[in-house]
Length: 115
Length: 109
Image 1 (cartoon, rainbow over the protein chains, first blue to last red):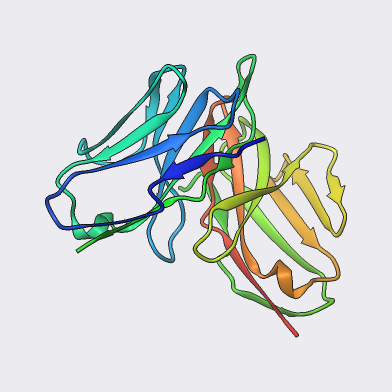
Image 2 (cartoon, rainbow over the protein chains, first blue to last red):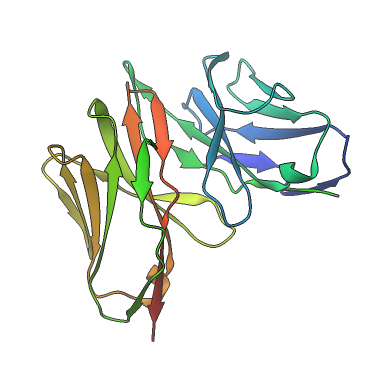
């Protein structure tokens, strides 16, 4: 069974530009989570999508946004890039059983460098 | 107060040693618990779920103490390949996942 996939693997942008990151969840998983991990730091929760809707959002400015498509894949968009946006962006998916969401499985991440 | 707190370490242990990490959580309504392992510059990988009765997977044992609101991970007979950062994850309301900042383990020859 294929795991969570993310694209691209690496990206270099300059300040002020915009970027779109993509994630495909494990087949059968309806929930997608996005996290930011700056070098040497812990995971910071960004966004959670389930069944096409945004369910929760972390403490990030509105220039971080995203969406989930009918096939449950997801995009993360970051506008007006700043140097401190340089980080590993991780996507995870989980499967819902009734009202409960099971453990998350992570993709390999997209490493974004902002110059 | 953070939802999930972990000692960042590093824990430096020799091969073959037994090492244990604790993780505390602040909300008594937390429902499910997990340990993940993260290698340097890689994604976190699920190590094990933590069940109320405690559970074991080979050299790894996880325990949950709801009264004191902590979970633990015990690694026996440490291997060099166990060197990684161990993340504690707590799920509350069935849909909110909270990650600890991780405990770094270095296993030395």
